[in-house]
Amino acid sequence: MTYDEVLKNLQTIAEIPLNQEDENFKRVVPLMFNYAEGMIYRELDFLVTKGQVNGTLVKSNREAMLPSEVLVLNQLNVVVQAVRTYPVWSKLSVLTQTRITLERVSMEAIDLFWPQSELRQDIPKKYAILGKDFGPPDGLQQIIRFMPTPDQAYPVEFIGVVRPAVLSPTNPMTFLSRTYPELLCAACMIFICGYQRDFGSQADDPAKALSWTATYEKLKQGVMSEVGRSKGVTQSPTGGG
Image 1 (cartoon, rainbow, N blue to C red):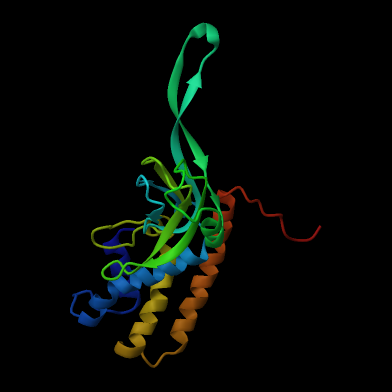
Image 2 (image 1 turned 180 degrees about the vertical axis):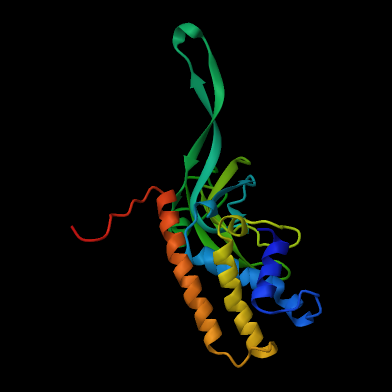
């Protein structure tokens, strides 16, 4: 389902006029999709949220900012040039790229064993993560500190949990709206029930939010089973015999 299709279905279900006259609802639509998709992605471990973001280290700088797209860093690779030598009789050797997976250690270990960042710069082997406040407009960011300090501008691969872009007019179809639109709509309806509690005509129906929460939980169980199968996790048959 596209952005327009999801929004029109939600307005129909929630009895919100389709004439775009509800200014309060229009203002909270972006927050609604952030709420719904964020809740689903936090509760379900989709393969689509496992991704890679590429970057480049700065020579002689032992710190690098973790890309904002990466929520949880699971693996960090440094890409280096390596010489591949063929058998002696071929007289051939070529440069190829190879990956070095860095080991994550504590910040205390980095500072204890590598207190002087400019000392013996080389290919990084270990890293640690810390928070650093850059002030406005960037604010608090996650920083990666390396050991040793890179002696070149090495390409790096940040691999981990990434958050897909939210459904919006400029991003009219997402993984959730395409694959699990019923789950997305149920999550949105939980948000809408909270909105209507203050602004809507159905403010006197406290059971409505609980009903949509139950619907969402039921749909989520089915999706969890499907997600497990997509990862190769088989479920044992249930029942007697």
